[in-house]
Length: 430
Image (cartoon, rainbow, N blue to C red; front, side, top):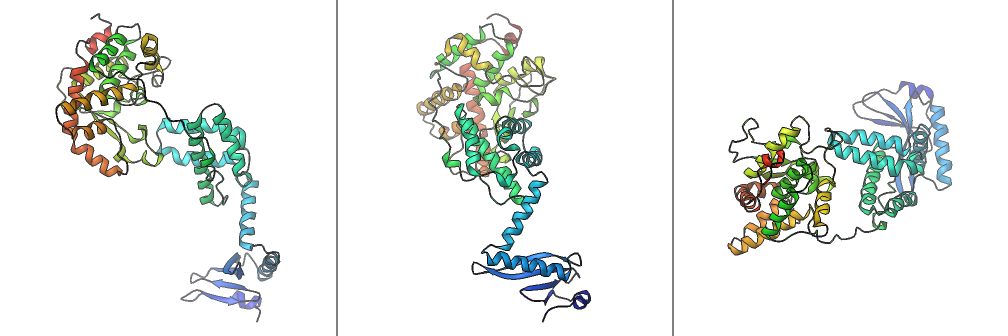
């Protein structure tokens, strides 16, 4: 029997929720709180579903029946009323301005506190350069996989294969954010990963393989006309064997257990703590403190830091740009110095890692210390396959004493015959 307006008005809350049936699957749902809403039970594709029309009295009995009848017409045309309702909602969002650019900027703002300033800037610049001009003005529900792929093909076309893959990940994250917000239901970027060009495997970085050759690289570079900051950055890179980008963007806040007021102080516990966000990691690990890289610093590295501090101690970065002390050194500065002075194709800044690995592993074999191999890998921040972040952090901490010994041995071998860091800073001849 159909409901009357009087029955609906007098429906009172009970201890448990209950329903007052009307007709054609329509019913009034009464919650224990007293809230009342119109709902319709129906079947679609052999599944029982529920469609909500809105709260009473905002939606009257007559209006609820009209919506029920409209839903039945959709069912007669083999269309799911719930899906059609969702489409209407998304169209309303789009009409209100839910374009890709607007949504991406909201996503970026939400992610920024989790990222380093450098990461946030890189993502913003990539979107402004490659994404917004192509799909930024489009409503999310109008963007499909071919559109996204065509956009990424342009990025690949200029040889930026790795950049195209990163942009796809970020675009996919924006759609994931939009799906959670109820703006759209499909992520067109998720299905095109395998359609992108594979990243070409890089050959081995050119690197010298003996301690004499390694020492000669530093000697020659430090006798050039390059600026003292570039030479000191090159020496710190050789001593710590991190990736060049980690050195060039190093910040003073990352160094610990150093007495900055006494350059002559012995610092047996000095370390460089590189945040996970600055390491070469999968995106999901960049917020995990377990993946930070803690580097035990030999005394020669501490001497470099004291020398550099006299130049840039008031800046955030150790190695500042020649254009602005608020920005780090250019990523190509050290490489250009090596190339200009005869080492193009023979030894590159990244090659210090291979140099260190080769020399120290051969030394471990000669000294019959097989356990050093894993420790050398840890010093290079190599993550063993299948190892969790917490396990990796534990293993690194466990071997810190031996890592410090190896770091000091490496420095003692490498710096033989080189000027002091202070002499290098002042331009004093050997």
